[in-house]
Length: 282
Image (cartoon, rainbow, N blue to C red):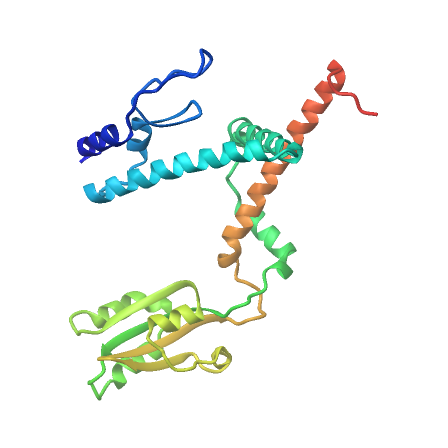
């Protein structure tokens, strides 16, 4: 397929290029398009082709890519010709270039020294000091449930077993279901209530406030009966469990370490600049 694409590129895009002057950069490969001395090479297009694409789609992709490449560059040159007040654009380009240098320098030479390991004490301490930042906007639950044939009319044993169990009874419940057609599932991590209710096919309205006085739920969907036991819950307005907040807190603490390293390097360079005379503060 690649060979066919190369052939298409050669036939469609290759043409003789005449240099306008001696300063124009000469092409270094097979050219498929040229705009004002800027070249699009065959190898550049081959590199960006999606994998597992058909020959027909490849030809269309190549044609569209070349068209867009040429069109964008012509628009750029037209903009350069028409626009006169470009001081703000040049300033933005300068600032963007500066920020790119800073970004890559930080990633390679500053942030590489950051210790990404966080202790449980660091995370717990931050959580306790910023509880007001971690108030739930949704209800979260931990639960486990059992499914069984909905046509079974005498299921009191299963219901009693499930409704009087907890996540700690995981092994016993799994043994109870072996070879019976029953299955048991455990949501041991905090899960948003709506997502959990979708899993157990609970299409009816279930008010989260019911969790205050109700820890079980029963539902039939299709040929399955769902027996559900809520093991824990946190309703809207309560503090977010640390398990949910942990990743966000870790990100904040690591970013804080990065900022500290950034500031230290800045201060170090400023001090060196003042000493050398390259920096003057008035």
